[in-house]
Image (tube, rainbow, N blue to C red; front, top):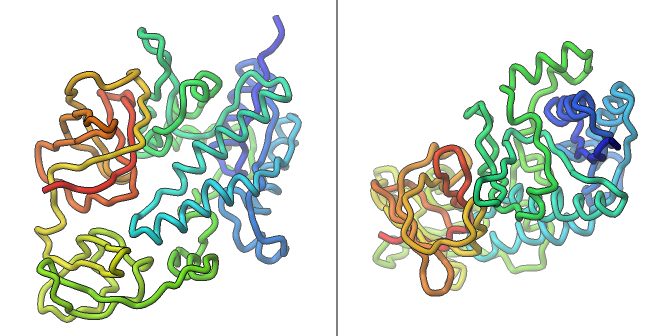
Length: 362
């Protein structure tokens, strides 16, 4: 029987490198590929950017591919990345929301673009080094199951994948812990066995989002007013792109007690400030829902919902609204429900689906 062909996205990190090794060991015909997404053509800028898809990533990934004796290519996805990730990231901040660019990159670049190109060259699957597991349920649908290691589980950032994408995806790392993956890397003599994980957003390596947005948009980013919950002006802010719901640091407001961002109003260029209790709500509305384990939400459903990557999750009741969005009612109030972030729904270890938070409801 002919070996199935798989294209694996290689970032030069330990996870995708070991994933390539595991797939080859399982008998697949493995092709390594790094996605070229950097926008600046200067060598200095590319090397500085680094991240998961910079020049250093290409060098590391190429060495790993040579070590594993698999073919390796660099695929250019610069235009897709700019449109689907960078432009989206900037526009969301300008609208007073806090985006998650990694989720957009996963859906539209790492999957949609890479999968389409891989299928064109005769591959059966694409693969990544994500800590998650693809499973097919009894109802015939594909979904994601949490990684065996909750500390590294990455299903939250992958909730938006389609059935077609899941059907053609392999994630061999999801059955291992990070320590086990590093141990395998050492056993097969990979130089990157102890390479640290990348943490920052790859196209904003200094984490200064507001500066990046200012340098990459023609929008008029001006100072505005901090206002309290009653609309009283209590100070001046630096521009709405500097803030996110729940933020306490960097406000430079002398109120005599800790205060927090509770809302961002792009229409009036206002940032609303409240007390600690004002950033809690027990309901949220989300739209752009992608269902995974179920085809649709036909009745109320109890799930565990995560409102950010680092959130441990809490019980909530899902209810579909007339316009297709969902109302999520939590058992207990949640802190800093942030418009623009993803909310992901779980039934045990399985992803039910998820969407984009529109607003919190008290």
